[in-house]
Image (tube, rainbow, N blue to C red; front, side, top):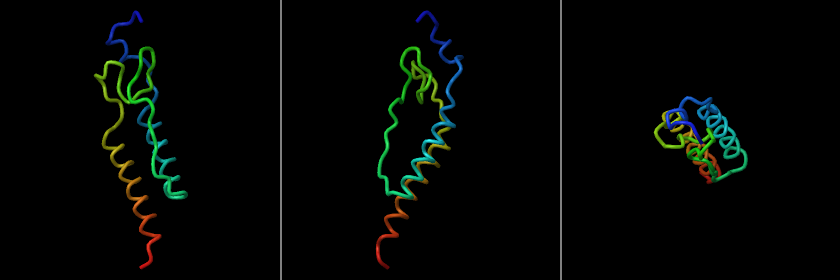
Length: 90
């Protein structure tokens, strides 16, 4: 690529916060409905020429809102615990 490293940060970027939030929301549905117990995010960092990772190609910019992701992930743990506890007789 002929672009400078700084140009990577000015490219239009897929909304990682929004797409991640939606993805985690869909996973939450799976946990609540079907006891799904895992998921994989396959692109944590960009590769040269791509702009859809959680961090930029050079790993200088972390894109997602970390507090939102923590809240979304906590809701997954809570849903899994509620489903697990619901199956245990009182």
